[in-house]
Image (cartoon, rainbow, N blue to C red; front, side, top):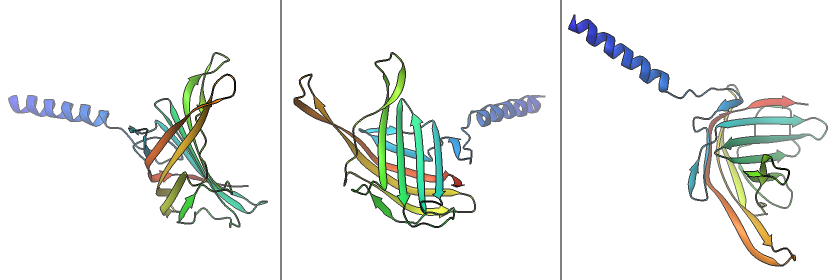
Length: 188
C-alpha cells in the first residue's frame, strides 16, 4: 500500500513540475523563452512577446528583417534592409551597422504616460550612425529560424523650456542575442 501511495505522490509531483515549465513556441509571434534578450542599462531584459518577419518588396527589390520585442515596459525594434535582393526567405549572414543609409535601424521605447493621459510606448533617444550593429550568424530557411547578436546606444539630447541644452541621456542596449528566433516570410 505504501508503494502505491509513494508512486502516486511521485506521479503527482512530476505532473506539477511539468505543468510549471515555460513552453517556447515556434511561431513568428511567440512567447519568449529567451529567443531574444539584451542587457538594457545594466539589467537583463527578456521580452514577453517577440514578432519577427523577413519581407521582400518586389517593386523596390529590397528584403527587410524586422523584429519587435516587448516586455517589462520596454520595447526594442530592429530593422535591417538589404537593397538589390531576391525573393527568397533567407537573409545574408553578415554584420550590419547603423550608418547614413538608414538601412539598419534600432529603436528603444519605454511605456510612459502621454500628455493625452494614456500609457503608450514612447521612443527614447535616437541611434546615430556608428552607435549600433547587428550580426546574423545563422539561418534555417526550412524551419524559418534566425540567430545572431546586436547592440546599440540611443542618445537623447535634453533641453530646458527655453531651448537651452541641459544634458544628454543615453540608453545602452548591449549583449543582445536572438537565438533560433522564428520568423515569417512575406513577399509583396
